[in-house]
Length: 132
Image (cartoon, rainbow, N blue to C red; front, side):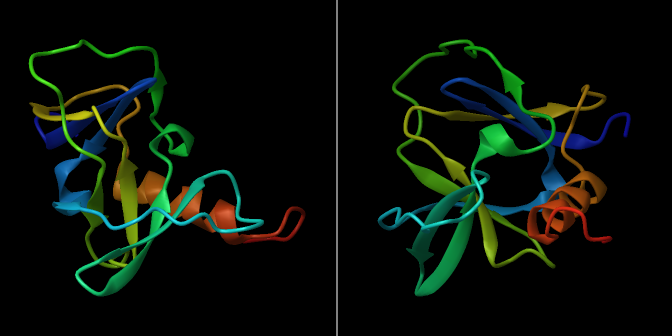
C-alpha cells in the first residue's frame, strides 16, 4: 500500500497505524460502559449521536506498536472515538484522552488494513477450535 493515506493514532502506550479508508470520522463519545465477559479487545460500548457503538481497544488491534509516542505539542485529544466505515459502522476505535491523530502516507509496517481488520474480527467472534 505504498503511498496510501494513513492515520497514526498515537495513544498512551503505543501507536496504531491504520489506513484512512477505515475511518469515517473522529467524534466525541459518551460515557464508556464496560461489557461484562467481553473479550479484552472490546473496550466497552458508548453512545454517539443516539447510536450505540462497540469500542475496540487500539492496543488489541493488529499493527499496534507498543511504546510511548512522541509527546508533540499541546494537551492532545479528549477521550473520543474513531468511527469506522462500512461494513463496520457499528464499531469504533477507542481514542484515550491525551492521544494524537496524525496523517501520514504509506508504506508503514504493520498498518491496519480492511483485510487485517476483517480477519481480526472473525477471530474475535469465532469460538476457539471452531473453523471460521
